[in-house]
Image 1: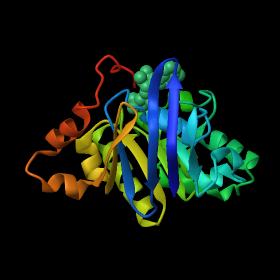
Image 2: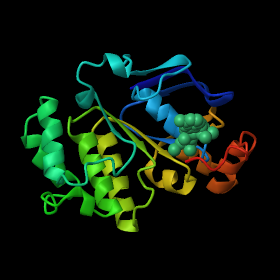
Image 3: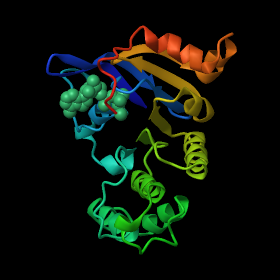
Amino acid sequence: MIELRELTKRYGGRVAVDALSVRVQPGVVTGFLGPNGSGKSTTMRMILGLDAPDHGAALIGGVPYADLNRPLQTVGALLDAGAFHPGRSARAHLSALAASNDLPGSRVEQVLRTVGLSEAATRRAGTYSLGMRQRLGVAVALLGDPAVLLLDEPVNGLDPEGIRWIRDLLRGLAADGRTVFVSSHLIAEMALTADRLVVIGRGRLLAETTVAELAAGDESLEDAFFRLTSQATDYRGVGAS
Ligand SMILES: Nc1ncnc2c1ncn2[C@@H]1O[C@H](COP(=O)(O)OP(=O)(O)O)[C@@H](O)[C@H]1O
Ligand SMILES: [Mg+2]
């Protein structure tokens, strides 16, 4: 489980994440939905200890990321595809990570298979397409077989086949009983992938709901999302990703 307690982050005078309190439960895909600039990436960075909150806390299984004994085996993350040494192959990259985290080498071949990179495993990551880099990023996230997964807009830049693949993968991981927290600014995509939804705007929690609940009303999903977020959207803030 992921728990956010009044999680708050300011950049200069501006609040990026505003007293966000949420519990993300295992066994379902939870979509983290909000317009560009609403604080999704900042929240995910704080969960992973890459950014320090100004107030509040982000806990994984009750513990802040920095206090985890085996971080890679507790939480896997895909924040920024392409964060690889371009001269290293997928297999070399994963093997180095496995070695430095005390993970068995057999995990490398397993995750390469899961993400469909076995054939391309010896190619330099610098030659990979965006879709292949996303797959390598997912392989890194899965390497430690973690119970918690965080993915920041994993669908961005993927082709339809890649989108379908990631959707099926996330649903399978949740069905295994894992906690899957995935961000997007697209309600249509989340409607196909997520069960639960955490909707934010300008860093604030706007709704905790389900796709089924949102779809049950008279409005279209797009209209419901727009209604939820329009009151909170500050168009001066839009443009960040
Ligand atoms: N490193 C930073 N320095 C200053 N402002 C930032 C930084 N990171 C994010 N922001 C600001 O915080 C707000 C939330 O950004 P972000 O978390 O990237 O939103 P999202 O991922 O939902 O698009 C935006 O207004 C953005 O400009
Ligand atoms: Mg973002």
